[in-house]
Length: 153
Image (cartoon, rainbow, N blue to C red):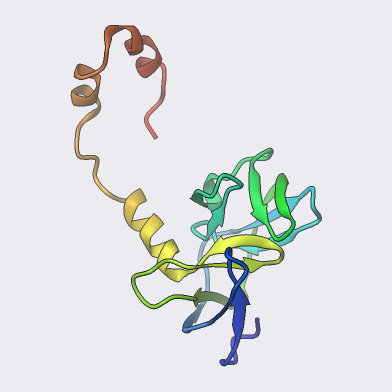
């Protein structure tokens, strides 16, 4: 991908999708370098959606060594995660018309597009519908010890 327009990317279903649009900017936060046992090595923003091997998207900042990601070859286990300062330009691709979230392979790893990134960011920043005390009050007694020992997210 060069960002010069008229480009296409491969998606999770194996089809090639046109890039509808891109954003170009800078990232004020350290980027995350992801390395896998499959040899993939990508640098992404902390909020960039990565697709786990089970199909669920997660922001890159929540990845841990040992997590399995979807890759062009099937699965790849995260072996290293490193923070890096980056002063270059970053692209954010839009592979589906708004508001449909799309996927594409970047460096051999399945990632989400700008629509997916926005959806994950919106969900992560929502105020919980119920307080921790309200949730606790609805749980069976035998679950309370586990609930109380789980830190807030």
